[in-house]
Length: 225
Figure 1 (tube, rainbow, N blue to C red):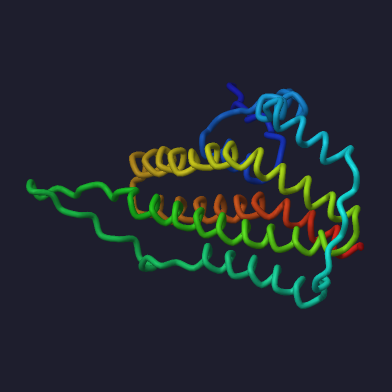
Figure 2: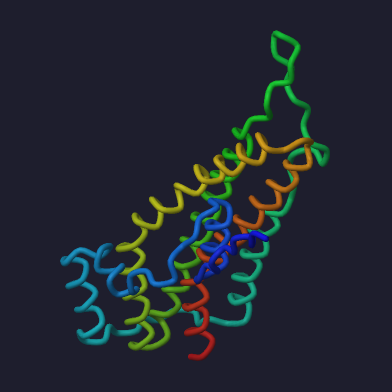
């Protein structure tokens, strides 16, 4: 009796595991080390700048309002608002009707509306997290010289990796289109569309979690300080 092939568990955060599942691919658990991967993304001029920020003289803290519980709550409110934007369903609850073509046959449901929604939410996430990250860095610079250094390093890391991050995340809607078309072409009824919507929602929530990781690090530093 033939055994069903088992998919190799994919390491990493939920976002990576979801992408691997939707792409129906197995990712090696023995990929390049993080240091090796970063060396491909960070050119030597950025590396020198980062080294100076880490090893140079501590920057002076500046005067300004301190981080407090209200600011912490505002960060949580922004994240909750983004999560609500993702889980709300702007389309009708029932699957949309198929368009009938000139021959009277049902035309396939198109991906366009879902792709546009994903891109719109990506832009909203980028805008919200960038503003929040910058504001938290400003508060770090007002805490102490050590926290000011952390803010400086985080700003440099954002400048260094943002282009690469943008390029990689821009490919997600393309992968999602392939998943959409695979489900649509293999589906015998409209139940596949609800499966796709759940997958898209899960992917957006996982991407939001990835985008908030640097913010969580800054918040942790501010809370402990």
